[in-house]
Length: 195
Image (cartoon, rainbow, N blue to C red; front, side):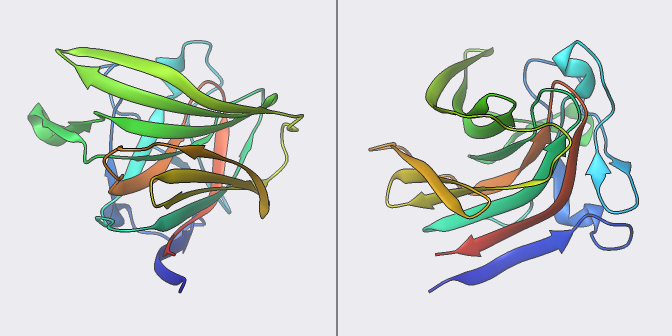
């Protein structure tokens, strides 16, 4: 039975930064912050270098079992707002955090990519786990959802099932959040439900 674990909108006074942890990519030595707009949050941009726009946070809830995470998002240019699920981030000096192993479900103008990121021996790496190709319009809001159920990711866009990607033997993800990268990205709401 579906049960809401967390839900918020990203208008002013509709979310609390204390519910979240800002996380940086191990590829860049900085954690950028969100800009508050009238009914959403957005990253800084546009910039051509991904590290200049990369802004990410995870919700502080630790997840167990099957779940689905949703966010309403848009992008101004070509890409690349995304949902992120994975293992807890690693602590860094100065109360900073960095991702280790995680998956990113990325929305961009040519469809959806599911990336698997790892971090071993001080080196980040990523592989394209799955992709779905179709036209996605810039400056239009979409509701992207990523489910984890019994070792399989389920991908949904605006409530329609796009596809599945099995990850047999994979340690279940236990944190979820969102990331803006490679262009101006906007987020309007976010939710996590147990399923």
